[in-house]
Length: 419
Image (tube, rainbow, N blue to C red; front, side, top):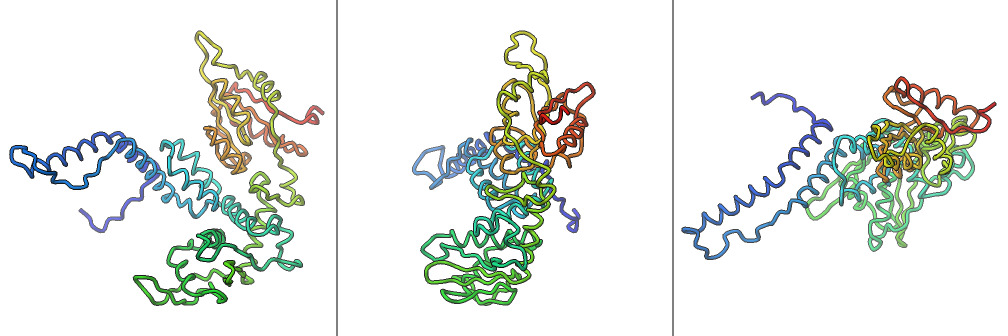
């Protein structure tokens, strides 16, 4: 055996394959454990004559609990392997942690739908996470115009409540979100437990902790000495009322400015977090919009496309059609397509709406449809593209390239399209 051989990194397929193999052997593993416990008990008796149990505090393993743990472990392994914590927003991370309490089945399709969007367009998620974090702290961050370098009233600090020891971890969690949102944008390592401990040991009420890379004293039950964190470019000032003020160094302000300028000025408008509106002055913001699809319009579009209700066929129903819906929003059209017994795949740029659609059980990719490489593999495309100007023409032309020969495309268009 070559001890110097480089260990092969596991892929998503390797992780899922290991999960499937172990899930199939849960009962066998439990039986092997029970047999081993029985053998131990028998080894402590003569001719099986019981006196008292040899195994004290024996654990009883249940198949359902073991499968649930396997699923959670598999999802967490994929999360770590794909480094989603470096891409996902703080809200997305918290949602994932809640999901691990009772995780869905681990399949390649589920993994692709869940983590694929982060890997397809990591930059958009990093920017969205930063905008979400700062919007929660100060309304000024809801638009880039109020936080440009040089504008009057530029916020150079944020106030975090609940930093005191009697207020739980709310304030410190908020601070960690700030640091990690900026770290993801800058390409720095995320804040670890040791760095956070060093900050806590470095200052008390009325004293400042300067996160500029200088060594700070710290200690806990096991160790004491100095710790040198990364240069985060900010200062924390804690007050006796439990609040903390976080001041940003000039270079940090520039990074915040650059990130929000990119988010509000160049990112597609459907990518904004709730309550955050992109700048109306940008061409892209004017060019792409989102409209709900009324139910009667959806029904007419599906009928026109020939999306028959397979559930009404009593004898020899046709095969379900493979249908694509670009810019699917929260899945209203997909709901109607699925109700008729067909298979549908959606593409949606807005992460919040894409999550809503996936919450209904739909398979949705979070991406800009116009940037998705076309594959002619769908029987039908049913779509409600953005209406502004004649931008819908780009969407329709791109969607045509996703159809197999003889496929059908039906698009809901503005009345001006007639002219």
